[in-house]
Image (cartoon, rainbow, N blue to C red; front, side, top):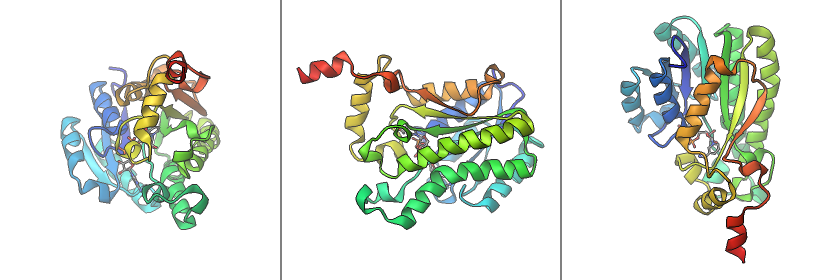
Length: 266
Ligand code: NAI
């Protein structure tokens, strides 16, 4: 029961494959009270209501690019959970360029703005609104999800790489600020490729997923394992970890080549 007595907001649970879905389940198992949120359009699928029932939680619609929606999300969460929160998960990403197969050399710049807004600036907005209304408890924890394409080039990741770089930069800048203000820590988890709606939407994903599996001495980290890491970061066990991008990738990021890959080319 690592989160007993804690309250938080989980964004981005679309279906049972979503990383956020597993995080919500584990929060509940660990004694936390949570609210769930997703974009109004995603709620039409209706799946998230199953999760809400399982976690004795409520769903509050919010497009996280809208400051007004975030304000409403925090108001309603306060009403349901009481006052302030101890943790927030940002598990949101989307690129219209990737979705519509626009090549990196032919980006639609309006769509690029959308990619950055949804996948990175929304993280800033969530923290800015929280700061302005003093919504975060002392020693609270804010976590976002990133990908190694922020540091190294993965051609299929296109403009999402820019979004993840920005997300990680916001993590450092806001981590400093919220650390000073409320002892809040802010981190991103750089997760292995994971089979989810967002993941599988990327061209060549399956091949890359298999490659990463063979490159990582521990194998790819699953969504469930990522959820366990989130619980640790929300818990008091990680009080002094902040402003970090934390690789959760079975060792992929520090592996030059593996025997499995060598065998494949021999
Ligand atoms: P997912 O597709 O289940 O989750 C993405 C969520 O973002 C969806 O629930 C979607 O409705 C939500 N969303 C999109 N636009 C939104 C908006 N304007 N407002 C609010 N919510 C919005 O996929 P997954 O994989 O669970 O993604 C979660 C996070 O993990 C994303 O940041 C993703 O980039 C990151 N990640 C995923 C990896 C993968 O291979 N699946 C690897 C590394 C990081």
